[in-house]
Image 1 (cartoon, rainbow, N blue to C red):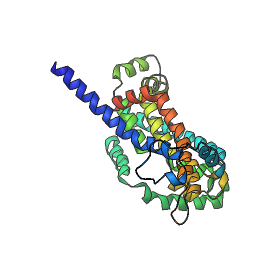
Image 2 (image 1 turned 180 degrees about the vertical axis):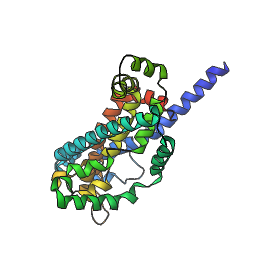
Image 3 (image 1 turned 30 degrees about the vertical axis):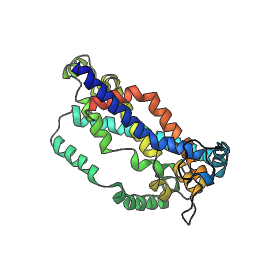
Image 4 (image 1 turned 90 degrees about the vertical axis):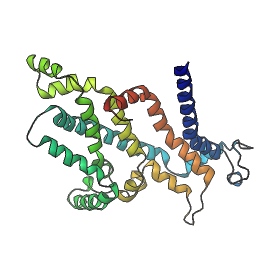
Length: 279
């Protein structure tokens, strides 16, 4: 009886927590269907008196969102692929190989997580500006500028290393006896067994880049290279006023790809978090 009571309490807390987490998103959807005069009405109205579905149409037409979506999908996909590739190779080296100074080097590499992203913006910008003088395709206002600084991360290496270290050494010994090299063992044994962790890292990398605002704002100058988060600025006035109905409508369809991606990899993502020891 006591065990059932504890389970009910846990589920009740989880339900309450889920409702609290969903509350801002529900308010965003509600606001996206309101007229400007109803946004700050008191008492607040969860259900608009007259749903303004045209807010979504007007928001979509207010900025070149089709182009922004293409840019964001391409850059986020490129960053995710790069993070998975570099993270897998580095994690395999730090987790499965032995060489002098491995642990010290890994500790030093992890120390880079303590450096705020804001501190690296100016050096990265100056480097890209210098590359523009050498080759415009590698400089500012390019896909390279949007993706390159984020195609490797210490967090990804740490996350995959924890997963790779859980793989039994007997599998590596058996693969070696069968004539499988290190790269073959990585691609044929380690990566298939670490799919949950790879999915979790892919979701983190894609989400982080999809929601990026400051870096794309700095390194892009033309509408052809802007991303979806920059598009939300179209609904914010210079004096601080905002078209709240249109802004929330744009925020809704900008967030839909991330929600769909999470629902698609939800089960694998949960397994990946469990395998790497994060809670």
